[in-house]
Image 1: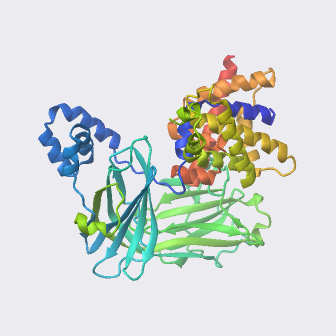
Image 2: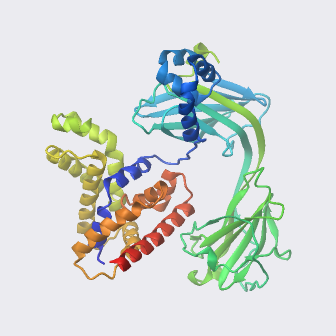
Image 3: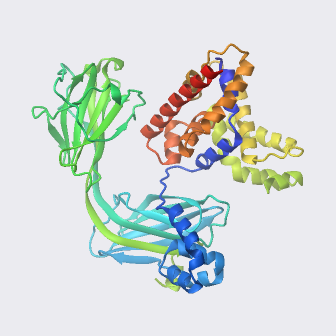
Length: 357
Length: 181
């Protein structure tokens, strides 16, 4: 089949599918989507609307329940505006969360939210929301959250929330609830050569473990090695094991069926964000990622093994390559219940004092 | 609303078109051409084509209409310019999908293209929304795997696995259809 034919076929893809994908194509940069059963809750609320009186709705809205507020907006918009709670800051566990600024540009809103330790120095430039945050809005929109900056003088870490309207309705006036339940701070990053691992005279590993509790697989190196072709995974070898950084152990390495396997163990991943990547560098310094990596739980189901598998025959002069590790470890976990709720409208820091916290 | 501006021959029509769809058009052109100036030229030519054809045309989806023109112009320019210097990424994705579309049917290429386009759309209808979007972002919009991961919030590895599985499903689907013909 010639390329023209292939292009003609692809060109024949229907408009509705092109438009559907355009929703993603138009998104900028890094994106994470958070919905907490909105569809289900909205449906339940609409079904319940005939049973609820206006006063019940008002109470529900005042309690901060977004779906009830949506319904109230539709029936009694002026009442909704009066009842809508505005919480621009909150404090828990000695940490303050505050809405610093909101700026709307066309169909995108940019919201800066800060976190500050009022009692010590638990917040710094490494502060991570540990996937515990949630963004709920009263419209149909797409939201992202990224760490933007750290101000050493005030001790505040700033996060930027970007909201893009998805359904053509006005963004301004919509309600937003941003909540966080865990922070991770003080993480360390390391990227160095692992001198202890030599790829010369690699041992052929014959004792493998086949019963694993798989967490996931990755083909970050662009390989197409199916996991079904992997006969088994390495067992920890105490003669090889070493720890390049606290929280990480390289547990074994060797050849299995013509492939190089290198295994690492990341401690306590449920409480920390310990993670990393093992990769090779050839003599020219070019990085080589594994064709496949498989992660699986340890016996206690608290830590995770990750086995990085390289197709040895695809790597020129494997024995001359070096092994490197990138690790992100450590960090202090801080829990709390932080929640801010506010209307999406242009808001500068000085206005917060007038609005009242 | 923008179509109305075109019908009114308003000067704001192109400005609005650019404001709303300029970025996605530029990205589509750049993904194929990998050259900013060439991409800008294609987008400008596409906007002119929209101005010249609307009216009398009244596309149901202006986004799909203008993106299709951008894509076609970009592909034309790509094949005209790139005889020696290939856009590696674009040819890789052509090869990826070409393998799955290979057919043993003995018909003219043009007829084959029409037949397979119809079957491709039917196949796309069987996929989940995100799976389908990842496929289209790769083979229609020509985004790289890393760019698709960024835009969809998926890991790079998950995007690769999704594309791999979709291509496999597509091969099986087309083979089954061929057996029935």
